[in-house]
Every structure is written in C-alpha cells, then in structure tokens.
Amino acid sequence: MSLGHRGRGGDRQRGQDIVTLQRWIAENPEWRAIGAPIAVYWDGPFTPFFLRRSEVMIELSPAG
Image (cartoon, rainbow, N blue to C red; front, side, top):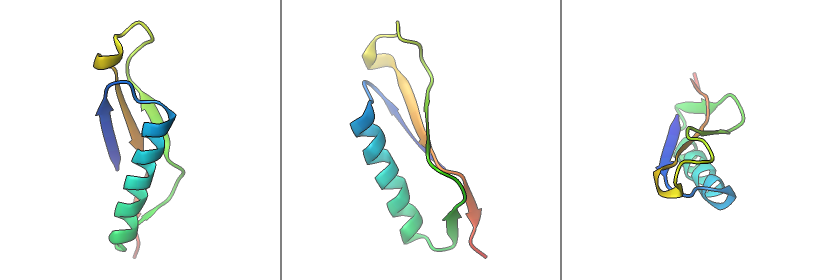
C-alpha cells in the first residue's frame, strides 16, 4: 500500500504519511503489515520542489 505526494515532502510529511497508513491498517484488520515503511523519492535534487514526487509504502499481506 502506498501514499503519494507532490511537493516539498521531508521528514514531517513522511511521518504523517506513515501514521496515516498505519491508521488505515489498524482500521482494516483483514490486512497486516509485513515489513517496515519505506520512502521513495522519484525526482532528483535539481527538480523544483513543487514538482517533486514521493511515496511512503508499506507491504501488506492478508491477515488470515
């Protein structure tokens, strides 16, 4: 499962995204996380901040 963003991002945004994903997992007990969250930054450092894309991902597995 992933949550993507466009814009500045950073540690604070990544932390908020992780909390959002973990809250979704807690509210949907038919799924469980099977790995640690990872952050992916798709654009290089010379991309203007307002065009940068990033995602936070957590691998899921059916709970059953």
